[in-house]
Image: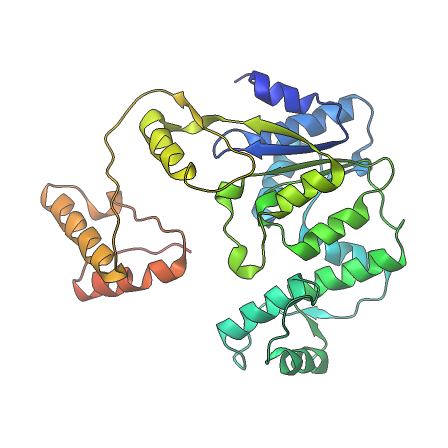
Length: 324
């Protein structure tokens, strides 16, 4: 499929600082890839381009679609660790499991404290946590970003790229934005891509308002992708109705590429248990009509929303397969 007019405008843009407000299913990853390919065709060297994503899977997928292993595509943490090991002695192991000595609430509070670069209130468990890490020569993922940021303060011209791309910018935390600022030099061009209506990591310190901060700090041109290629007209109409309730400085209405319609229902529940019981009733009604259980899927945004549902499914011997 050819690029649409909005996508072409982004791919061939000349502005130094851009923010792309990209709705769900609007082809933002393809736009990033096509812009990188376009820059390479213009003569930009592979190692002058840096792409930062939020998952290893996304970085790997982009690398495969660009069809070039020399373009630097990493997660923030992967890039921080690689840069630290190339620049200084960094004899630490990564902590990749939650410590039993600390509750999940403790760990989340510590993460938010570190991601603010120590600007929020220090959690009571922080000192004990750091003592444990130091004793075992461990670093957590937040430490990586802090150490990398401190390295960039000491050596501001250590890392220089002509073009930087940041995907899923709505889930950037303050420390990651501070790192991005240190990576921007006199001739650096930046494209940040995101959608505040898709932010999901606020519980770990991500701040969708950083989008506005970036636009203000760098007088970035705001561009939009609003044509949705993923869902039909009915789903898009419902999504737009919900999105309009969000307070946003930059608004968008998704436009469906697929104009077919189907009937969908939306419900609001006051209690999690009422929601779970209703869903199970629907499942049982579907099964009675001949629909197979493995043809039914339940999608949820946060794990804590699923606990009561899974408990009731087990109690009523409704068999289910859970994916993380």
